[in-house]
Image (cartoon, rainbow, N blue to C red):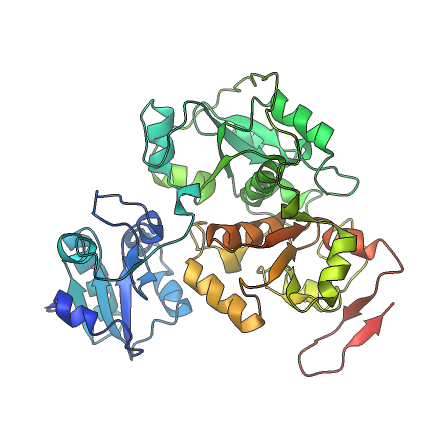
Length: 437
């Protein structure tokens, strides 16, 4: 069964940009949406107000669920564009078969829209720090991928006390790094400057090394002794945050982690690569102390009008039903913190990721945060239980170019360990909340 597709012109599309009844759909890879010029188009980015719905996602049985999650509804007029006419048509047919009756296709993105500087494009401010598997493959193959002008790099497979995650398959040439190298299990905070210097040098990292990090999602289970061992995808961003705090100047994250490497069909290695130490990291650690907030400053931020603590935990953790961790007994939240729901539990970030583990469309994240009062004009300190989820939310804000953002490193673990610190339980919105001290 086929449907007739209606083509829309550039001028007609211009008139639809601010029409709330229309949804412009970008079916290119997420990297192109974010700003990478994958087809050498004149300008990178996406058409103003477009939604990201990559053609790749049509391979998922729950494709329509992602469509609805993005508030793309049958009553909307759908306008689809991309790089490839066949992919545009394929997605258009999917919409038509799914009960969307007003579907249009736009084939002139490269030749007319991208080429005309008067037509509006949007992009992720720091898109260069979120790289694709194709970019990494070109890098390790001896090429010179776009937006890379260094002569030394290192690929890091991050994990938490789970070298089997690395040994069971990794990107060729990648070394492994346990998150314990950079954070201390006694507090789950970043290690001392001296310990960070030693760890980074041991792993062959200087301040001038381009570091590309990724992890492997392995279906974390709270019933396991160490659930974080299966959440290397979040651990990679935790390592990235600490490296940036220390002073590594060029830190990249493989968007989608090891899953994206596999989806790209690239070679998988099982070689245990040796770590080649360097003698000197190169700058005084921490080069960026402003990226981390500790408890005294967190308390001051709670009193300030131009600052917010942002709680990146699950709702059951936030209202005090569970602590979220098998090694934390206390349940509740920090009074005055703004809730920025991570997803189901301490080892997942569903609300910040797509179902192929790539980072969620940044407009959606910013819109959700804005409704909660999380805005770029404030000093924001993101936190969770022990720092992983807080680091990932922080990285989202950093990618968007938000100017004054930190991670409250101690989080709920450190806060709740001090009996003098107040805490709350219960549902806070327009209801009486139990105040505890």
